[in-house]
Length: 454
Ligand code: GCO
Image (tube, rainbow, N blue to C red; front, side, top):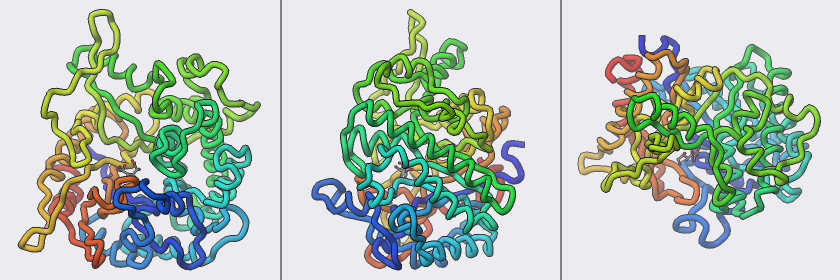
């Protein structure tokens, strides 16, 4: 059997990208609220103030999911919506929103997967140094406890962090995401260490506070390279290329797998990274690595693309140049379905945990056609190709527990604003009307047949 009977066929979103209601019902500010106010940061000067207005339209949205046969919904919680200052006073109305959403999902047989952090960091805590502050792991622990107390009677699946590679790398190294800073390697390594500690503390807290047997995981990202041929040398080169650390500190050091996943699963930083960073290494206190490596139930991994790799004549890793006219998405991301075979395979070999693909998808230039429908054959073709590869991985014995398509609806794509459409559901931002795209109906068939039609 290719996919397990209880395979979690899902869709994913994140709070800032869909909720809107940025200033409603006692919500505090996040760094994304503030970042979007700065000139020339976001495409067209756009922001998430209204986004898909999911905060008000969540019931309608759950009905759309039901219509599409969705079995699992991965969403994130806006930390300052429930703790306006990040710690301390709890905003009841904010909690209620998520509680109602969970009820609505369960009523419609959709399993909620809650991500604690998908980048909308509380502005009040940012003013106190954000992830640079050694107290930040404790802040996150407090937040995790509030969420678990409120939701774990009904929610079984929790994910701590989404893509630390991005909110540290793009937010603090490259500076193209909130808070838009370019900080030193030493500082960002220290922040990363705090994020990892926050992760570990949250895992512990979720288990302590949970009202039922819960499953806890993590959702990093990075490129998933794949071999040029099935020869053992090329396969080994691809494997190495995924887990090696960058050779230099130039550019975005945070864009890698091992720095973020080895500490979590093995309780230690990867040796090549320790060598590379030398005296820039963060301060590691006694007991830190133990906190960071709390046992997890699963690895979530966001996979979009990767490079083709082979071993050259000298036995070195060589990234194969893409041919002219290589397939790409509307955002110019390469289309590399093989990443959904080799990525899970290599990750499973190394970390030995059940894997959820917590995100995978593409942006297309979707339009509403004369017939009132949204025809997106490119998305169907993309998803089909990728899912065939995932199926192959599953058939080959990789323990794959679920797949979440990014994204449920079109939404606020960070610095690209609303220019790029990632949804299975089209959103008209003037009217907030939703239209299920052809790909949404296609995905429904995939789900109904548990992937038989792939
Ligand atoms: C990410 C985030 C999502 C994005 C999606 C498309 O991977 O960057 O998790 O929030 O919207 O990946 O870029």
